[in-house]
Length: 282
Image (cartoon, rainbow, N blue to C red; front, side, top):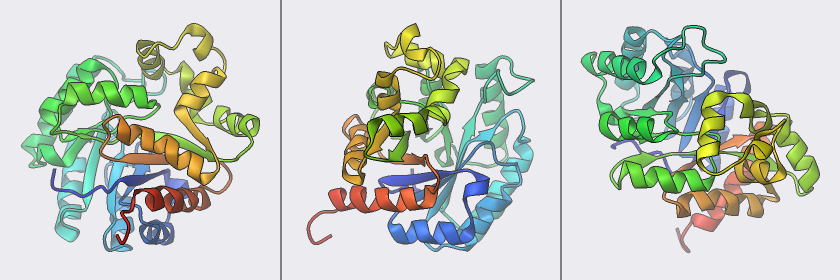
């Protein structure tokens, strides 16, 4: 893939991000800013974030096939690529039956969506898929640059790399709470996606494939599951948790900040993580 994602990415939703925040994250050393939660097909915010920065890659995590018309997405891609060559990565996902009323035949629907994007001139190496299970991971290997999975521990990253092979990108996201009190940090995680999304069928099935039990998935999750999905502690401890994905075969790890001040969390994580991964004199 020709786009540079860097080792570290930041995941933010529309209400959490602004052009100024994007500049702060670029200055902090993030390689990619992931725009989460089904951005609209016009990708207008993506372009504003790129306009405000100079090196940062901006990516979607992810465009939802049920709500984003593929021809509109393709036109947006070409508009953005013309303005900011090589700085936009299109993440595409199939969504969830719990939230997408038209959800049906997910694999075939995603294949058809990719066909439209490819026919409209978007190169496969500029697309990543939100793939969790083996079949979707093989699709990401065969039809895209790789995958951007979320709600996954490092054990999933290891298995995903085995399916993708060495020449596809693996860009998992991981939740983070900067709080040295374990019980308080777990409570923060349980009030956010790590605890609240366990009833989503796609995520639950994937976690069961990894060996988590009904006990782990009950309610807002066992301590073991919450700890696997969420790096918490001081910045150095969190950085070590994120590094586990790299050790398992990831090319990059994206940070989902949890807590009251996501930008401050992202800046604190970047300082510790990039400090640990910068060669002496680098």
